[in-house]
Image (cartoon, rainbow, N blue to C red; front, top):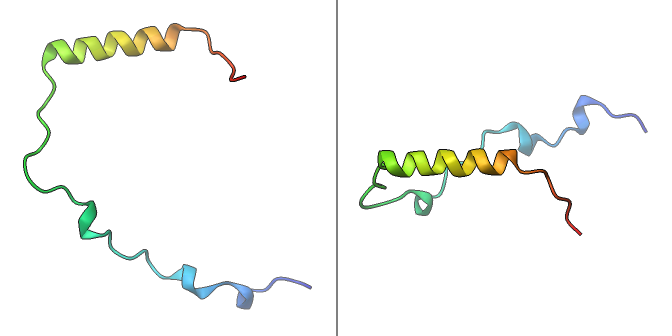
Length: 57
């Protein structure tokens, strides 16, 4: 059996529905990171990237 354009599921051709309103945050926004927190995150990221990769058992 050959596939043609008529076999396409037309439901997939429509745009995605809007996100649920429950997914939107209400209230106070997250506080920006301090310079010390940013530096610490950069250091931790650098350490993790330099570690050799381990394989899961």
